[in-house]
Image (tube, rainbow, N blue to C red; front, top):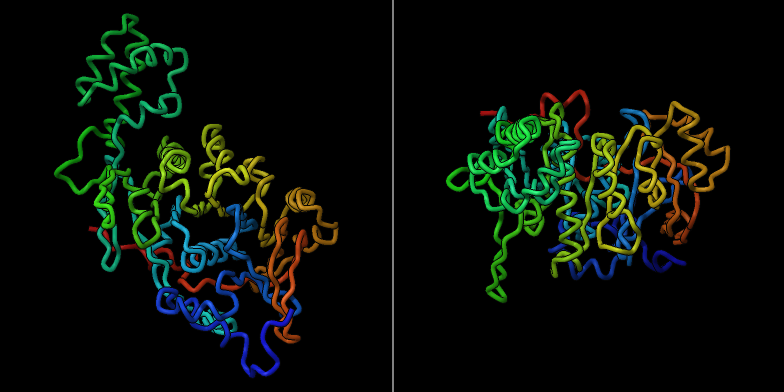
Length: 442
C-alpha cells in the first residue's frame, strides 16, 4: 500500500507534522494526513516506523520491561502522552513514586530526542497533569508554581465498602462485619469507638479499635473535610443538561481537560502503600461497570513500577478484572524491571510488550514463550544496547509499519521486532535529575 502519491514530493515528517502539536487546532487538517489515529513507537533496524493504532474495539494492555535506565519509563511516558493527545483517552498516571510527572508536564528539552521527534514530524509537547497528593498525618504541603496541585482525602465510609482489604482483623473480622450497619451511621471517630464498645470480648474489642484508630491517627480517611484544602469529592456540571453529579476526586479530575497523576512518594514506606492505589483502581472499575458516562468512555491507566502494587492478592484481583479483554473500555500500560513478578493473568493478557533487556535468561525465556518467539530473540533480549534505547517489541496484535524509503505501508501480526524506541514529546525525568525537578515545598 502506498503511503503517498508518487506525485507528492513531500517527506514523511511533513505529512505528519502538525498532528501532535495541537490536535484541536489541526482537527480538520489531520483528517487528510497519515498517522491521524496511530502512535509511532519504534524505528526498526531497517529504518521503518512501527505504529500502534488507537482506534480499536478493545483497549490495549501494554507492558514495558527491562533493567533500570534502559528506556522503559521513557517509552511508557511516550505511550501515555500519545494516548492522551492522539488517542483522546481519559488518562491516569496511578503510581508516581518519584514525582516524575512534574517533569512530564513540560515539553521535551533534550536536544537529541527533539531531533528524533523531528524525523516523524512531532514537536515537543507537554502532558497536562492535575497532581493529587494523599493527605496523611506527616504529609508536606505541596504548592508548585506552574502546576495544578491538590491534597485529597477519602471518606471513612470507603473503608466500610471493603473492610477485608483495609482492616487485617483475622478472626475478629466477623465481629466487625456484624456491626457494619452501625458503623455506616457514624459521623465521627468518637461514634465509631462507641460502636466498637458494644463488643463483649475485650481482646477482640481492643484489636478492632486499635486497627481502626490507626487510620484516623494517620489522617488517611476522614468524615468531614469541608473548610480545608483537602478534597473528597468533585462535582461535574453538564452545561447542556444542567445536571450536576458528584464523583470522588480522581474520576472527577479525569473528566477535566487533562491527565491525573497520583503522587505516592510520601506513602511508599507506609503499610497502606498498596491499598491506597487499590482503592482508586476499584473505584474506577466500578464506575466503568455502573456509571452511564464512564462505561462508554475509553480510559487509559499507566502504572510505573507495578511491583509496588502487584504483590497483594486483592490488588491483583482488581488488575485481573481490568485485564479481561473486551469487557470494559479500560486500557493499562505498566512498567516493571521483572517480567516474572507481574501478575500472571495480566501477563497473559498483555498484547504488546516492549523489552529493554534482561539480565536473567529465565525472564527472557518466559516472555518469549508467552509470545511464541524464537530462541534467537531470547539471545537478543540479553544483548540489548541500553545506551541507544534499543528494545524488542513482542506483539500479539496487528501493528502498522511505514517503509519510508520505498513509500510503503504494511501490517504485521504476532511478530518480534527489534529497533530503537521513539522518545516522548514531553520531558522525561532521569535518575540524575530527580533532585532538580522537585516541586517547591512550603
